[in-house]
Image (cartoon, rainbow, N blue to C red; front, side, top):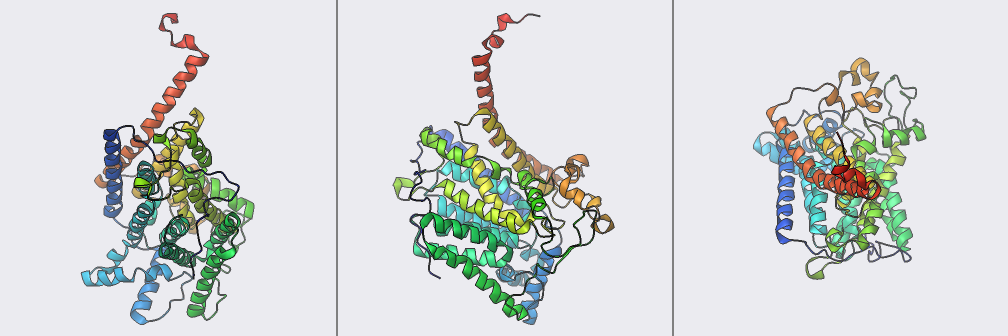
Length: 491
């Protein structure tokens, strides 16, 4: 499949140019210290993801692993309803594990390996096009300010789709990239979407957006290629290109009125509200950066001193600067497609899994928005308070998913999951807040992990608190100057 040209993907003909010039550092020493601190925190975060003990494979992850073993050992296609595209790329780890004598332990690192490769690809694509400080913060939020920890501990398929689609869209649409890079990006997108066929809706919306912005229909070839791959795998494994693993599935009867119904039977409006706002699965709580006003912050940057601008050209101007808003928009539109397709499905919540399982790709636009907004020096006090709240939720969610990710209240699965909805909709049983209601005993490693995440939180929160304090002081001086005159106070 040929790679669509991308020279004008970032904006339509009538849109203003939102690119800005390269930032001028305020001080080399401060910049170097910040770079050292943030790079160290990224390294520590990845190390914690690597050394945290893995739980036993279960659920969809175990089914995928068994399907891979069946193909490698018996040369037979498994009848599990999940795609084998992602698991096939884990075959080298399985062979390495057999050589080392512990294949399951080695394969359990698969999603972490994918995530690290994704970070490296993001850095390689953006390092000459984005302000170095912004890029570091973006990567740091992905490592220590997102729900990735819950996903790198198992063999589920969401990490493969997130990395291939997220990085692939970036590689395919960045201006100034070569044909091979764009082609590799589209191939990655097609593989990632075929690995999770429900994401075809997200890719369709992205392709439609690109067609509208560039007035070119060639982008429609991408979802068609992904659909062809989905149908090809179904034909190969089930002798039916139209085979669907979603329509006939269903769950057990619970306290919820629409439980037990098969397929896409959940009321669509209720599904949208639950996906966005429920305490146990809502994107508002697990990816709060997704709801920050990024476009306003990017527009404000046009009038901001250079050191606060969110985008930059590469060294010596050798690379065209990236349009942060366009990157965020493509990722967010893809996530919107996921919301639309999963909202009416009976299992919109993704089973007994930490957080909104099906929406892992949302960590990309959420982390990018956080990285921009924490540096938005022209933002008002209420905007800074919103950013601070998003940072608190994001870093707490990241720490929670790594330390408490396997801790679930018994009520979630007692009596054949009859009251499981309490864990989806109520704060007391939400995975975010349940550990605060009933605190489990922590190991030494878990205490160290929480301390490291606290450092990340301080690194981002202290400048925001200082900015809010200065703005509050200025507001008091303007409106009630007498309050700051100590001589006016009496006992």
